Image (cartoon, rainbow, N blue to C red; front, top):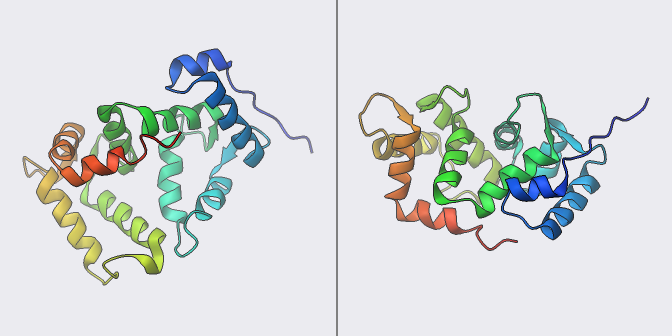
Length: 188
């Protein structure tokens, strides 16, 4: 059985599409290629890699949602370009770009809205991922309390869904959210 390898677009093109330098892209590509020799990562491999960062919890569901956010073509795989474009937004994008990317992560069914069920699934996945180090300790209704607080803050017109604009405005008004968006600014 032969392995089909995927070669990424030229570095110049990726440099133009991202906020990374040619040298940074080369480093990222070597790391990507080391974990994914074929140049493409499927969901199971992505989950395995992601789980290593959360050894005390079950990161599989959150990794599933994260994988889908990176898999912009919905073909069940992430190429280096998909990965590096998403990473560029998360690490070096404008505030609006980061918030839009995060909104798409939470909009599981990709209908342009975040509903209570989607938010509940995301919150549960985060609690599962954090495992025994979750604070406050997970009790039955804690995820639902987070979802209720989220909708109280974000669903400005009280129609039961959060639009991208509602999400962006509410996040910009929240100091904690703004601090968390700045956490990764100096990673690379």
